[in-house]
Each structure stands twice: as structure tokens, then as C-alpha cells.
Length: 627
Image (cartoon, one colour):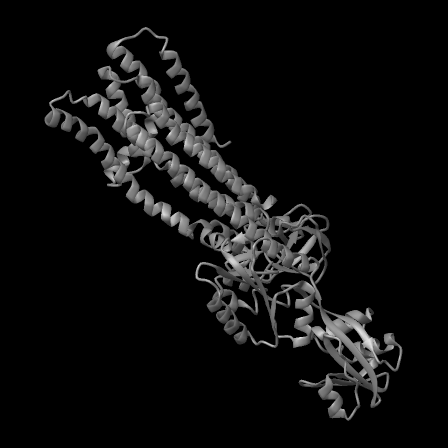
């Protein structure tokens, strides 16, 4: 509980005790009035000050003005003997109780977001003259070497130049499992070093590092309002003046009609009491407070799970999504190529892999890396001579004095080698040794663990159609789509083709539904921007993802897309519940108050009670990630 909340709670308790205690004090007239003013000002002085400031700034019609007019009017009625001091104080007291609940709810959601904010580093260690010196991360230049000790946060993105450790990335990804890091690995800011001492050469300034971008993203999320929030803002601007005018009419017109039209007693105090009751009931606090709070809580709950939503408008759009388009590589697959099979080999499989890895030892292409990983031993470059890379074909080299050719069918035809086709999906690497065909190696991307379950979870969450776009050959794309249960697949697409295909799908969807695109956020930036909702997958440390996407998953787990949709759906359901509940209760009580059935105590429930219930309901959005 914050200091401000504690102070308010003390004021509430003092005012409540005084209000109840004064009922047993035998005071009359002016003395009684002055005694009741004490608890009234204890609990309501700040509301009165805010109302006066609103009048001075020509922003009259807000909840502070309504409470001030209603309670001052109730005090006037009490002085004349037509009302009760307790009612006036109770209106202000219970209004402040509702404000306290609202403050507590916001504080709770902020604390959940602050768990993410804990990734903000306080300092960076720089070694000078054999001693570690703590400096502000903003002062560290790109290319500097910083030292991160066990238990400290990594302050700036960089590459490990010395040491190895386990990293706690839970604040970024929501994943509690530690990740191992060693010399040569890239490391992003916001992680917590758990075991060894790391020396890191920074690759970015602090302002451009991952932790700064994430913090900026979350802190500014509330500035992008949803349609529901815009509706409530517009509604309140019209609603509040309307009810004030209605209350004034209720206070003046009936008594004037009675007095001049019927010649009866005007009953001014009766109609003034009804008008004041009408004002208390009409206060729009439940809507104005609970709707933004619901979105704020939803964004906070999602952030805690490593799902960063850039605004409540995107959270709302997620709930309307019925079609999700996936990029393949890096989204549904790991983007890491592995040797899956060796076919028609005329020599031992191990020897074939060895020759392929040695011939490709000078290349940094992912295919070459996969061959070297499959070999699994250190490359002895002295065994390799005369390496020649033939663009678009492959590589030729002398390995242990033997002529080795590694490449595609074009290379085999170029060398006049008769090769054998392979019908297994994947990248086929044909090999010839001393001019004779030696066999082929099948290399393919690896499907992410849980990708199939993620697609199934999306359909369970209400997604009508799943589509996969890939630049791979048809056989590869169709096999992956079939294995994962994707409804539709389009293969051999260039980045521009992906944009065209997404535009085509956008035309096919219904006007009220939304289309989301999930990609790795680097090569897919144009498509992420074109879709109704761009979801960056595997985006930890990717500048392009954070800039282009509307939703950033700080882990590469596709299952979190379904979780994000469930979060948004539950959040929107809570918003609609609060709108219907608050307006329904208020309109019923307004009618009852206008005809004299509802008294000030029912008005207090219609205002404060409804607000407290709506706020407590909004807090549930914090826990939608548990679904």
C-alpha cells in the first residue's frame, strides 16, 4: 500500500468514526452544523478543491463537481431541517472509499508491470585500473567492455568476450528456465546473470538497447486508446452536462408547475432532494475509471507473461482476430537447419559428412554451418585446398587430395555427374568425389517444439483460419503445413509476394474481423505493418520486431499467440460487462430517484457501490494469463 493510500485510509476511518459518533452528541442548531462540518471537510476537502479548480479552468462537468454540488446541497437541506447531515457526509465518505479501491487496483496492476520494469539496470560496471567502477549505463559507449557479476542485471546489449553463465530471462520472456551463455554469444539487456562473471563488449548504446525499447513500449502503451475507451471519453463529455441539466430541471420545473399551474405547495425541498439524489446516482465514475483500468490491467497481465502489447487498441483488435497468417522460418520452425538423412551413399555416411563439412569450411552459409555441426569435430583446414565457390551452384575443393564437389543439381550437371533425385522434402545437397556421384544429404529446418499444439490452441481460442506463407519449395512448405494442421499454405514467395498475399486475404475477411500476421520481425517487417495486427515472433533483441509489430512476444514460443488472444478476449469481455452493468444500474436508479422512490442511500450504492464492483471486476484482467 502506498503512502497516499495509507493517508486516505486514515481519513476514511476518522471521518467514519466522527460521523457515527456525532449521532450520539446532543447538539442542536449552529453547533450541530459546525460539528458535522469537521468529518465533512476531513473526508471531502480535496474533492471541493478539485471542483473549484475545474470551475476556474472552465472544465466544470466532472465527478468532483457532481459530488461537491450534491453534498453541499444535502448540507443545506439538513440545515433547513429537510435533510440529514449523515447523508451528506456518507455520500462523500463512500465516494472516497470507491476512489481508494480504484487507487488500490491501479497500484496492483502497476506492481505487476513493475515486475517487468525491474529489468531497468541501475548501473554498469567498467574495469579501470584493476578496479570495478559503477557508472550510469547512459555513459557507456558502444564497443566498451563491461563486467556483469552474478546477481546483476545485464545493462546493455553486447557480445560475451569472456566467461560463461546461466541467465535468468523470465522478466523478458516469462520463461523461468535459465539459459546458458558462453563466450561469443550475443546477450541482451534485461537478463539477470546467475552464476559466472561475464565480460561483455557492448554493441549498442543504452538508449538503443533492448531493455530501453521494451520499457518505452510498455510505458507508452496506455497512450494508444481502444475504441471502447474513446467511446467512454466521448460519452462522459456528453453524459455529465446532460445529467446536470436534467437535475436542474428536476429541481425547478415540478415545483414551478405545482405552484403556478395547479396552485399547490411547490415542495422545493422535496424536489431539491430528488435532484441531489439524481446527481449522486448519475456520477459516471464506474465507467470512466473501470474501462481504462481493465485495459491497463490486461496489458500488465500480458507483459508479465512476456507478451508486450503496444496499446489497448491492439489488445482490443486481438479479440476480433479470426485469421492468423504465419511466416514459416523462425516462426513455426526454429530457423536452424539440420542434417536429416543421407541417401544413396557410396561411402560411409560419416566420411560423406566429413568431406562435405571440410569442403564447406570456408562458408558461413546456414547450410554450411549445418554440415559442420553434423560433422561435430574441429575443422582441420590444412586438409582442404583449392576451395572454389560457384555462385548458385555450390562448392568444389580438394580434401585429402581428392576432388570433392558439394552443391545442387546445377553443380552436378555442370560437372557432368549423373545424380539421383530425392523425393524427401528439404534442401538436397548432392556430392561427387573424384568425378563420381557419392550420394546426397537431406537438410531441413526443424519444427519448433509445441508448434503443432500452438496451432490447435489457436483454433480452440476461436481462430477460423490459419495460413502459412513461405519462400521454401512447395514440397517443404506443404509437409510443414500438413504436420502442423495449417489450413492453407502458399510457397515460393518473395517478401513482396507475401505482402500481396496478405492484402488478398484482407479483402476476403469480413469487415468486423481482424487479420494477424506472425513473423520473425526482421525479414517480415513490411507484412507486419500491412496486417491489421503484427505479431513479432522470436523477437528477443530484434530492433525490427519492436519497431514494426503491434504485439511483441519476447520468446519464440508460438503458443503465446493463443495466450495473447485469450488475454484480449477476457479483457474485452470484462469491459463489456462493466459497461452493461454500470449503465443498467444507473438508468434504473435514475428513474427511481426522479420519481422519489430512491433516497440518498440508494444513490450512494448506485454511484460508489457500482464503481467498486466495476473496479474489482476490472482487476480480474490482471489474471487472464492464468487461463
